Amino acid sequence: MSTQDSGKTIYGRVTEILTISETDTSLAVVVLDVFDLKAARHPLFGMPVLARSSGQATYIIVSVTVGPFAKRLD
Image 1 (cartoon, one colour):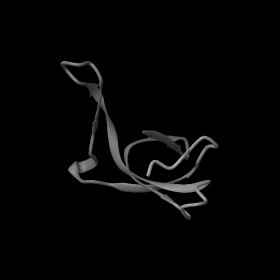
Image 2 (cartoon, one colour):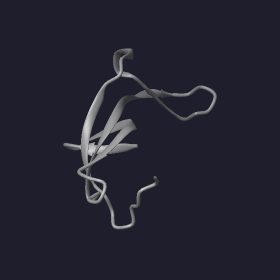
Image 3 (tube, helix red, strand yellow):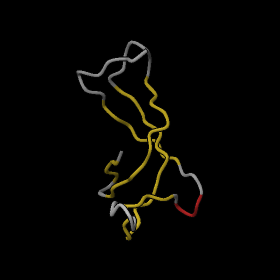
């Protein structure tokens, strides 16, 4: 997942999705495990490489608006 924050793209893995309540899922926050996009591509696959900044996990919280077709997957 990537998101825009003040004009900067943030690449990360969703670790948690938190909502206000089980019945009101219109507003939520997502906890992202943040990665850096490296300049070099993977030598074998030619794909972009993501890596942890300084080798340590960094987390951020992003507010999201859930669309009308979202449903719980209990």
